[in-house]
Length: 414
Image (tube, rainbow, N blue to C red; front, side, top):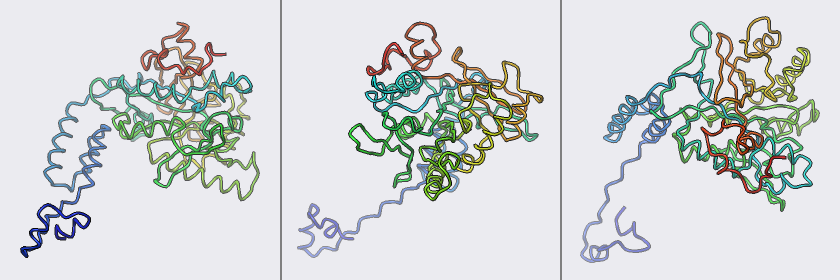
């Protein structure tokens, strides 16, 4: 294409003079086609996947690729192995409050529970930035605890730059229960026309929009801006029940009956679950009915798990992870072992990763041949109030509680 034609709206400098003298049109040298492998390799490098970055460049021989290989090798050589995988902290949240005016309204029946167990989106955004600024990197337990050739669970190395610290993140009850409708929360996850997962949110005026209105979508956008926050692309674990459906879709036949609408909800939830997994999230059972595994009998656990396997597992896919509702574990400090009837049942159903709650310390974990148990710290109104009252310092290593409190939060926590 000539310069004269290329500048059809405005002649390029000198173009008119060349045309008047009959000069031959000048054909510009075509720009080289960008190598997509470079972008893939840079992302993998940013997320500490050094071998993955090398593999992305295996067929690239440009000067840029050669230079990038040298950078990969240098950063790989400088990376260090996290010294002890049993010292990895695990923070967990519930769904975020988007509109505190509705969630904390004096007339809101769930006001006390929302204040105790939830954080606002403003609080979480500030916490997330401080967590990142303090050098934490998100990692999945299923990456650093894996079966060896004999099937025994073993710790696998985490290689990150010196000064970085691995962190597990999980979110309980990502179901958008009926009691949350109209209370200032998102209502579901959906996949937009770009293939990205977003939340559906209806504001106080009744306007419905798509955007980042809960932990996973806020984290997704944060990682797009800060890819080094996600080790090998890892993000977090979503604990899912079943009695009000899955991921905001009323998919439960037990609760809503068998119908064309229920089947449609199941299909929508399945599509969202697949997109979340592609984007670095994993799933855990949170039991079907949010039951207390400590207090429930084996018969009750069996019946509940049968429902979860029938109604939730087909949507999410298989998972070896179980997040205990209420943090209610099936053992004390003693290791899980054969003869513990509840453990034997869960193990037979495929669960090997178990997550109770312990906010008394920054980390706690227990690894056996057949199970990995990791305690989680609840980031919520209860723990933040304890921080403000000087009764705990468990959150101090992650963020400064006083600096992140939303002015709209009731203080003290009711």
